[in-house]
Length: 94
Image (cartoon, rainbow, N blue to C red; front, side):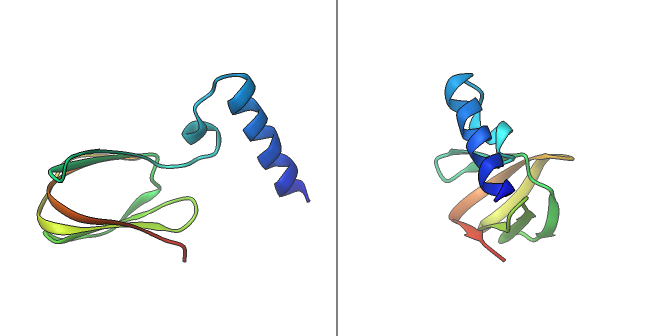
């Protein structure tokens, strides 16, 4: 019951106080430019990387990005910039 109440409070705060949902609800923010790069903020860590796949830990589940010729241009504790040809962005609820 406390989780539902907490979610209601966060929703109310984002609606009434114009706060960004990704910050209040600890959600990732994903910004893509076509299929050439993706910028992910608010992740919890890098789980796997190759030239065809990137897997990030999220607060709830994982984010899997598939494609070709991947290069990590920037990596910070909660931010990452990936370049290459992006074919799929998949949320995994594990």
